[in-house]
Length: 97
Image 1 (tube, one colour):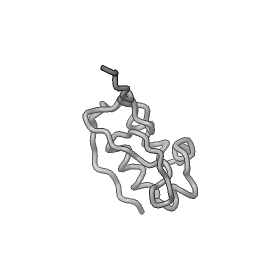
Image 2: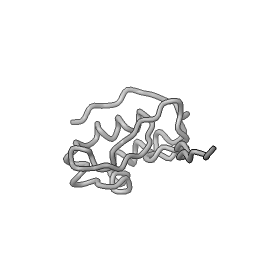
Image 3: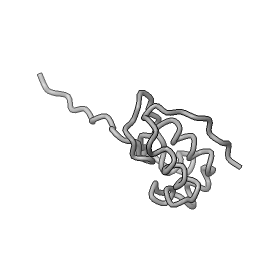
């Protein structure tokens, strides 16, 4: 019998770097609507924060990488704020302005 290779489950959120909790959401770094295929694991709160901060067009044009997105002031503040929270922490997310 052949062993089936399985990809290891991700251990950390691609945005904040904290360990993942019970729920993991997958984010298209470049939005699907803009032709993106690559996905990364995120906490639900991190995923909602990204989409509350920038539209898909802005993500594609201005923040095509997570590194570029992390340089946004509001994302930088969010990552600093969430750094000491437990993996399954949740709080309401502000809507995109």
